[in-house]
Image (cartoon, rainbow over all chains, first blue to last red):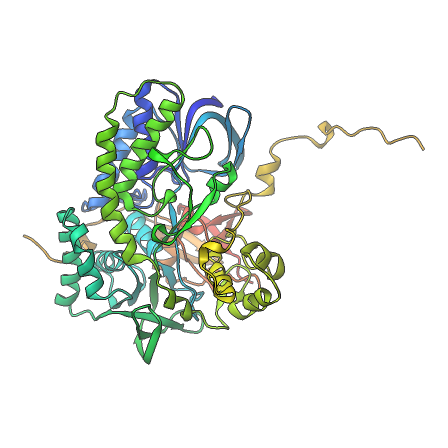
Length: 473
Length: 96
């Protein structure tokens, strides 16, 4: 394996793939590293080997096209590897990754980070029960394994994903007990102008919603699931109407179910940016902490470019154009003359962004949603830390997620704080009565993903370790 | 014909089923599907116990981040959403 290359791209979703494809047209060595075996990312996730034939979907078609393009290009695709650390040397970036239990590295002159997003799920009582999973989580099971989840599912959340999950669950032969969405019909009407530019997507969305009514599946607009009940798995959910700021109010209602798919929008996976030294800023409209960015994916770190949802949630259409622009920025950084029409790409990107941002706006949690997290709700799933414990630590003086982590271990677990730090930041801001953007962002530390000590240690003989002679007595 | 909400369940062709074990229980899965999906089909939702209070946990993020669906295979810890089932796979949960 060659370890010195021109451009490394981390992430093989719509952004990473497009960055890689365009950069590879300039006679440069391009390596694209990705956690999944096949390119596609979460949105165009490849079907598992167990699926021999299945009806096509817009996602499977788009994914198939990009996988085909990658395999016919000069891009070296390193699939099924996990990047766990990125370092900067004098004139290169060093990417440490795990490949089949072995820790490897490569040096690149330019780096494109296209690591996408993860889901935000507002902690509520019972959300740790088996049978509760994210909405993005459900879609990855649907796309990869093509099976429905549970026998009676409740979908609860924000934005367009709610209806996609409900539609896919039914398409794969599963049942939906109810759809509970924080958005109102009016919220959707307000997003209509932006959606008119994407008539096919608008039509698809409308079809999902009409199908729910035709199949007589209850749809609760302006509601949210407030509690999940069950002993060792889900048996029913409690839900309530919400006010305009999404504060739950009124009488609780109940639905029997055996699984719940819930989510409150996406948040950029900002950890890789921090490792390279890109500063973060808070932008609620883009999903929370986002890297500071300049035109065409440029950052404050020379040679490092960013694109896709990781740079702010704007959706997969914008990720494609952003990926192309960031790929070209990396090429230009290495001194090649750009032959692609950048101005045209920028216009396409602006158009895609306006659609993506309208969808993001529907998904982003409003302040009242934080009230779902009761005092006894587990906020940090890994370490089992409740809101009350975190608030006590804040009242004792913890001003950042880092100090909450050192105090009560919230964010110290195996997920690396990826599923609790947003909620903890909200709690600190609330206690200090200040906007969230005044709270210091969490500090990412390697490893980005769990790596076993065995992998890190690699192959060596203890006898080869240099041990200096003890000092004479 | 145009269908508003098609059901594709019967149009999906899968590989043959293979045997695997989960905590000694013999279960069936389509060869090559993710262990997460196989466990879901077998209604084995309780995959691990929370480190702090031992509360039951299952599949949550399905993208290799949350670490709640981790199991052990051949002494190695791996997320069930990132593991493919093969004939004779022996899986132990981290339940206590």
